[in-house]
Image 1 (cartoon, rainbow, N blue to C red):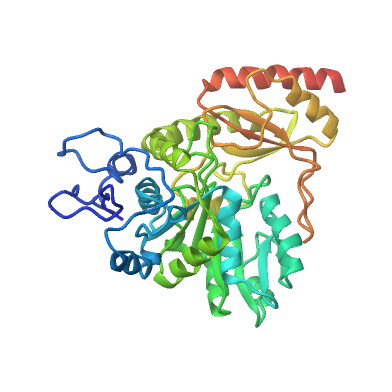
Image 2 (cartoon, helix red, strand yellow; image 1 turned 45 degrees about the vertical axis):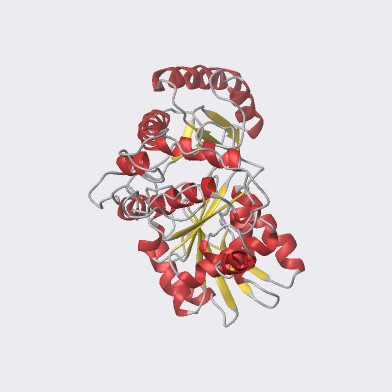
Length: 417
């Protein structure tokens, strides 16, 4: 969006000091290199400093009162509202997603919780895809349920007519996550959004897999959620989340909820995320290519029933991915032949050398996890044909990763023959 940098006091730079706004024809990598910085024709370090603080001082009481009246405009009134380091990252994430305002919170899950609580109250109803991230389901089934908010889980492949049939007079939120966590169903977000808006509901989207490949506000989304822990950080060493909006009223809703909940992100983690964003374009390009090379290889293995990667032509919603996305990340699922057990798949993963066994993907390293037994489905969408695993492909040489997977698959086939 061509958002300007800010001075150390948190205000936007004046025109004479500000960098030229990013042009729409400039590429993503160019914008990630220049957004949120003071510019190229200034004296000083390339990277903005880390600003830490809790107490904010004012020269007089009138100045403090005036700042407090602008609490939704990111003016410094107290440390929990963030500072210049936070504002730079917020501007950059808004640029990534095509939004106008962004809020940085402490974790990806916090980025789900804040907008859900901003729009839902006792007696309300929300619709959530059956393929949703597990902790989001836990939020709905525990806190929201206890507060009198009802959740209906729906088939993620629902069409517009089906979504219209699911909405109620008290439906306030329709949640989407595309692709789905673990099983990678691509949702028809524009169709779902049309049905949701016709019912007066807000559309909240977990866009962590889409990153910048899916532009949420072009497809009817009201609030976009990301775990910046993943590709934005890129090095498996921070915890952060973001909530991005385009409408001013939505900004007031999520900013107010975050303030009331006491949400805050460490400026040190924020600074690391800013550094990660500078190289994210090249990391994404390399990891997308690596992921597709490994996924295509797995498709040809006799031990594999199917590969759940939206960018593969054999994926059941590949047409939606091709229509709505400009690229893919390097996270996908694998379904093994039904003759294998989940114990077999677990032994296969335990025997890999280059794949770590861990959950928080999006870093530079490859990961593998068995997912059968960790996927909860309550809307009749849980038949996959065999035991499953999830792979995240990092920055290693794909030939080395394939060789590691091959030795594991050969051993798996021998043990179970």
